[in-house]
Image 1 (cartoon, rainbow, N blue to C red):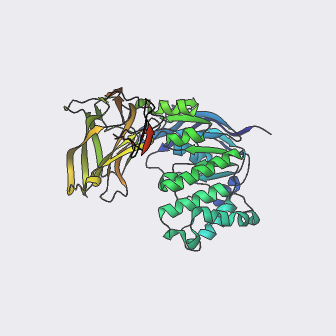
Image 2: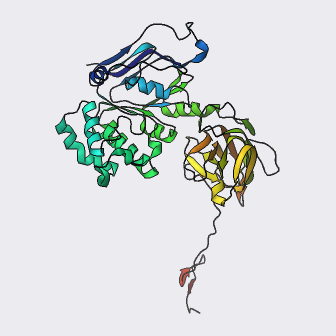
Image 3: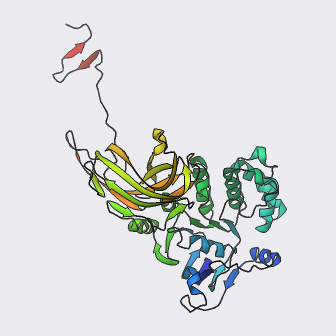
Length: 440
C-alpha cells in the first residue's frame, strides 16, 4: 500500500466571474464520495493560456503540486483570496479543477463551512445519520459513536430539533463532532473553529491532536498560527493561488507574517487579508509615539497612539472601532476597542478619522502584529477587519535598577508590583543575635 494519502499535481482552478458552474448528478457525486482512491483529472491547458473573456476570469489556483503522507497533519495558511478554500473544496469533491489532478486514497470527512452537508429541515439526530451515510459509514458504526458525538457537541437537549433552529455555535459544534468522531481516514478542516468560543476551540484542538496520534491524515486551514505550529507536522503557505513555501510550521508561519508593513503609516485600500461586509473600508492606519511622530517602534513603557481613517459607504449606527495586538504567532494579546470606554459615534456615513491613545504600553520587548477593525454596535460581525497588516516593535528600556530583563517565555505584559517583607516575632539577624518578641 502506498504511503501517500493525497497527491496533487498541477492543480489549477479558473473562476469566470458571473458564470455558473455545471454540476454532476447527485448519484455521481455520492458515488465518487464513497469511492477510494478518488482522482480528479482535467485538461492539460496551462493557466496562462488565452481564453475568451479573460478579463472577467480569475485563477484561484495556479499549477499547485504537493503530497501528503498517511498520518501527516498538514497546515495550510495564507491571506484571504490565496486559494485555500478553493483547494479544500476540490479535495472534498465539492468543485472540479480546471486542469491538473488530485488523488485521494482514503475516506474523507470535510468541515468547510458551518453546517456543510446538513439539511436544515432535519433534526440533529437525522443529520448525524445522513452525514455518516455520506461518509460511507454503516448504521451500526454510527450508532456506536452517536452518544459520544452528541455529548461532544453539547446539544443533548436539542438533538431532536431541526438544525435550522440551531445557533451558529450549535451548528459548528455538531458539524465538527460528526466530522471528527465518524473516523474518516482523511479529515479536512477549514477556518470553521473561529465560530466556537475559546473553550470549544480548545476542545476541538485537543480532539484533533488525539485524531492525529491515531494515524489519521489531517488538512488544517487556520489563521491561528499558534494552533498550526502546535498541531501540524508541516505547513504550506499559499499566495496568489500558488505554493509560496512548504516546510516546517514555525518557518512557514514566520514567512506568512513577513509582508506586514513595518511603517508608522500604512494605506489599506488594497490590503487583501480582510473580512468585510462592504459597509465601510479602513483606508489608513498610523502608529504614533508620545510626541505624535509616526513610527513602527517605541520604547518599552512608552505612550502610543493608533489612528484609523475609514470611509463608510452606507450609514451605520454606532459602529465599534478597535485594534488587536497579536504576538509573534498571531495570538491575540491586547483587545483595544471603543466599546470598552462606552464611546458612541452615532450615525456614521462618509469619511471618518479617529484615534485611541494608550499610556505607558508595557508589552514585553519584541515585535507585535497589528490588526485594525470596525464592527457593528453589538460587535456581532465584522464591517471591516484588516488582519496582521502592520507591525509594532517594543524596544527594551531600563527599569529602576537597570534593564528589567523581561523574558517573553515567561510573560507578555509587564505590570508594576510592590514587594514587602513581614517581620516574624522571632528571627535571626546577620550577627546571629536573636531578636524575639519581648526579648531584652
